Length: 462
Image (cartoon, rainbow, N blue to C red):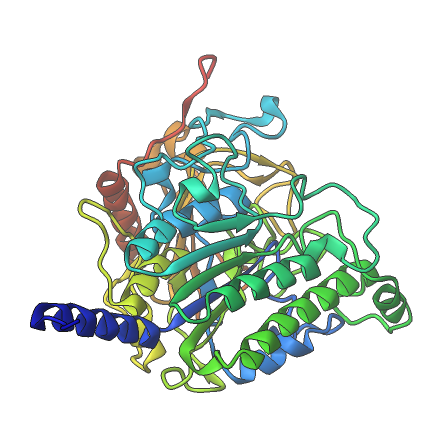
């Protein structure tokens, strides 16, 4: 039986396409839950131990000024999956934006969405379209109804071994299901090792309720407390999580996939009040640095320099365009991406094109944080801009109700910090550096118009 020239051409093209696909880097994205910037050894933890992550940091490019897109779980994940700021997808909080003592609220918050709109194309959908095999293992936290589940949003495979993730369980050998998640992720990688894959490994650790292996807990009960941290259960949960991450990285190596896999590690928001993030101010749920600044590492053999540090401010919205760039793909028609590809930084470039990054939280979250703005809420309605070394907070209660720009010198609506000399946000210079304050304020107000950012409104009895 003879083979036509056309058949030979089609066969050769298919082989070439398959070879090209194999050359494209795999992506392993390991996402921690509630892991604070100060909680890891490579960021200076003094009681906690993260030997595997510290070793990985020595192999990676470290981003000490990396940010989450929001101060707590669901909105941060929505920013990550959509590549968009919160005004575009409308997910601002977990559940309600009206959390805390209602009698202390001065504004009616913007209502919260709890799921991404089906038409909002996720990075998983885009990467699957680009020919990647996509897997989600672990926490989702963006709705469980039809059209909102991971397999509805672009993941070929999805499994979460903890359908009620915050419930306490008797799992002495598998706290927070972290080792089951590692096993499932390893199995996904092995099944798809001949293809370009994207594995989104979203742990439930170290979110409450904390859990650890008994031997690990005893280890930290016997350890002398540090100057900043000293909770044995928190430390033990974190140590076991670090072990699970180390096991996954070792499995990647054992499968011979290290050299062709980009590995990204970070967290969804800042650490909880149990774990001080000093010198950063605040914790999970607020928009001071302790609530949104995250540990972040990227290892891409042949591209990133081992042990290098990138001081550029980056945000988890950047991961979507980065993944597309790595895959040699483009966003779908009409898709707005607010982030910027980090590939130039990974290759050693010092700066991105953009000037600023933003946050918008038009609601209330209960439970005050360490060195928060007040003793009632983690956050009141606020929007934030980071531009170069400067960061400005605009608090909407005072802005809307107490005179706005006309009374900005008296109403305490604006806080301005020089992040280069004051990363702990201790010295508000809004009244002494008026020029920089007005520059960032103008940029933030213009961004509201660009994104059609919805605003809280005065209460009817105000």
